[in-house]
Amino acid sequence: MSFNYTLNDIILLSNEPIIFKSDEKNKEFKILQPTLKDIYTKNELAFLIGFLDKDIKELQKWINIEIDSHYHFLHLVCSLSGKNDNFKKLSDDLLRGFQVFIPSIDFNKVLRINKEIVVTNKLFNKIILVLYKTMKKEKIIINEDDDEFTKREKQMKLRVQKIKNQNGKKEGKDINDIITAILYEFPQYKIAEILNMNLYTVYYLFGIVGKIANYEVSKIAAGNGLAKKHKYLIDK
Image 1: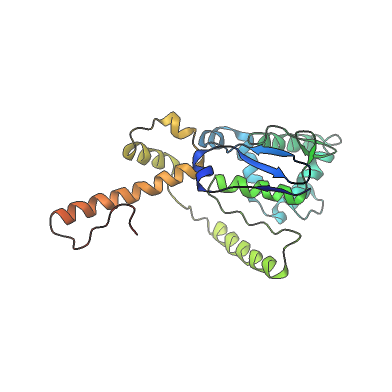
Image 2 (image 1 turned 90 degrees about the horizontal axis):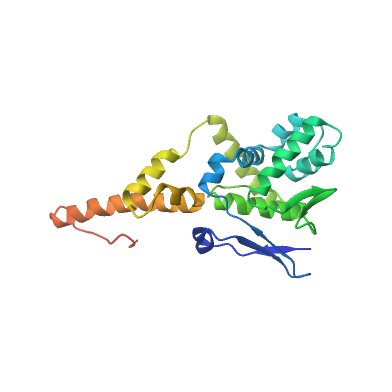
């Protein structure tokens, strides 16, 4: 069973649920877009994202069993949860993380949504890519059916990403500074409203903050005859 979804800037900015639909049996499920508050207050979601950010070699150390993907790891610990307390806690924590944005996901012999949709490796990867897009983060996943050129290209990107992570360079602004900047430039928003936005929207608004600041400086300079060219905010 193959699932497809529609995702664009309007859906991301509206923070509406993302619908996955299957053409074969007319089945569907929703992914809720995690809010800023979800990401920073729900430990189970933070744990899941930390798990997904780790590469397979790092996860291998957690269980001492050979795995080839995050999907394989999750299935393995869920399957063994009844035999090992550590696996039980690990599987419960990971599933609770997923349930923040897919409340009906659970494990009963296999990973399922709405008790009837079996989550395959391919569907799992699609779900993870959507999750990361709502957080405006890049996620590189090598799929089983990728051609050799695509696999090599993704492997190269993963190596570059790993080197950046190893250098320990912190990218971007602190979230408190981002919220402060948005509140200043968009006084119509209250903190509670910003906390209920997804990260994609938060970063979108923060990106506009810089443009507004540059525009205001340019406008003043043009008015004083100090700038020959002055473009409107949305002009390229």
